Image (cartoon, rainbow, N blue to C red):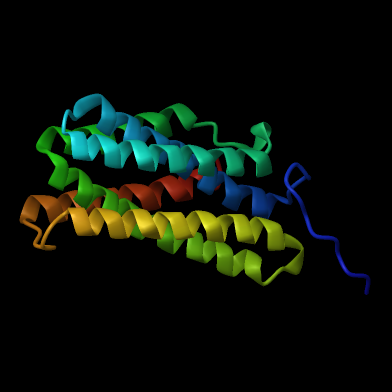
Length: 183
């Protein structure tokens, strides 16, 4: 059996890979808009620096995923993911920096798990090594974002509202992934 060549950005993707990558693309679109929402609302200088740094990283991730996923394969619901991301950043920013840090920690916890699943799926297929490495690098940055948010968020004590908000963020992320696989 001949060896299959490594797939590179811009090549056609089989439906199973395209649907998985569509979820990553939509997630990065949402992430960019989370930080846009934070920056639109907050005036806290430290939080603005945090959000700006993370926004730049998320824009780079989005550009990398853009290179892999043809426009015709992207989610048809990108306006919804932009709005959901913006609200996920803006609403906690109204409550203050700690709420933003808790939100980012919750989001990035989900994203790390999601990227780990993608890497495990693709990692078993040598022809997808370059895409797998791209996702691994994005996941590494997301872990760093989570750790930075956790450190900035304080003692880790969460009240009922914070726990409910984090559960909503997690559930919303799960639903978004399921929808993006198809739309």
